[in-house]
Length: 279
Image (cartoon, rainbow, N blue to C red):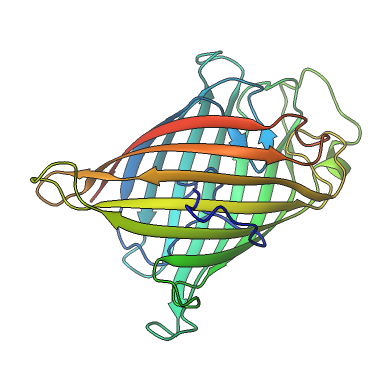
């Protein structure tokens, strides 16, 4: 998720169905395939928030495009590594539609419309409610004159879901403090370097940067000031295996500059390794 070009880009980011970049929006609109995978992260940072409070995380995901129609469903599970199978856990279920406008043209636009339900099956620091979200994401792969340089923009609106029966405490302002919008500006850059081994494909290095504007909400139901909360830079690359190159290992590293203490008082650095199988 970064760019050799660091970038003070406006805002935005991705998740080839909820877990690809440190954020959670797709980089490309049309990916007509099913996918399963798992990711290890040294720390789970999401839209500026340290979700599991300095704990690493294991993510598992499954994504299914419905008959190459652009409609799809995905599920992603997040589990803290410091509390294995304990109370720190979240599951995200997403329904989405993604497609391309003006394909092949300078103004070609990848877009995605999605609805997400964030389900907390366990207490998670005493959180009392699930969350819901609607989002729209746009990316423009041909807009800029530099090959491989792609700007993106994401708008997400979040509001409370059901109140969970196991709540340890009830936060009377949770509804208010977890309702509002995120806007994310992203800039991604991909370039190719020679393969490490002759039997391998050339290596694509992907750099990502993003700037996040928080409208005054927290997934943890805490008081948050509105404004630019953080900027992230990072880098990743894929190692594809198998005859069809459909088994992909992706190491990545990210750094977050935190600007708003009510979201996160600390700058963050973390690494991740994911393994995904597409079929």
